[in-house]
Length: 328
Image (cartoon, rainbow, N blue to C red; front, side, top):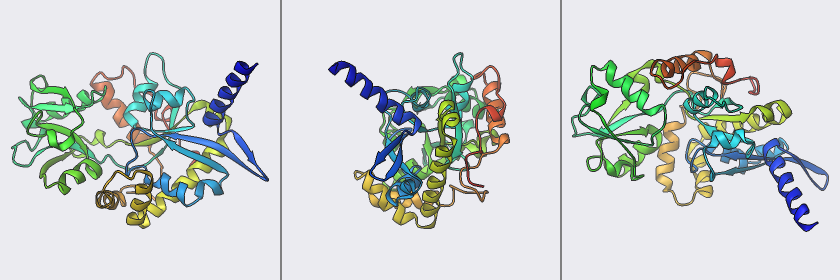
């Protein structure tokens, strides 16, 4: 009986995590919601921490916990209903949905409206465009869309992709440039800020400037089809509160950085403030509605992935994302 009780309790906890189960405390009812990050907490995520600290989730009747992934890729964990929501990327969602065994997930909000990432080299390296990548070494994370982007940019610049060396990054960031590698892929609002604060000058080649199809959504909030079908009101409530958190982050990035520091105390507050200030006008760039996405962005990137053989067939944008849970 004791083993059966433990198993039942574990199943109940898993259901609560995945579906926003209603938890009763006195006269109040809240729904337990878990958000799985894409990696460690950073300034892309600050709006959620602001919403958490300011009670915006609680006002919507949600008991939100934000956690790091510990047991596989976030998209897979969300598909397996080990979390209510997750932080992912357009490229991961597209690849997951076109796999031999597609994951039952969908993007429900874009955290940032435009791609803020690009390739970097040391300022004195002479590497200023993909035309200069031949004979160099690139250190990355080994994602399925990564080599496709590099190949496309080099090909369009008249360079031979086969002459680029590729290794997996050792995690040392900008410190590896000029030593174990010549090129890396940085997020301007995070990696580039850290490099600048350490006196490291970089050449920055924005992806969106190299090919307009590379101006995709990264990161995005995802949920499983089951969660979206079972509790649409909870999903809308979560996004309403999250949008308020990002609105506050935009309005006062320094204060938002202080809130993030409370959840990630190992960071340097000045770095967080610089990063948050950079992102402040990126969260809702070219839109009046936080989180909204467009078909053309999804279609363009899917066509790009198909052209370079990452996916066999491009899905309609409507199969990949929805704006229906956003307050517009």
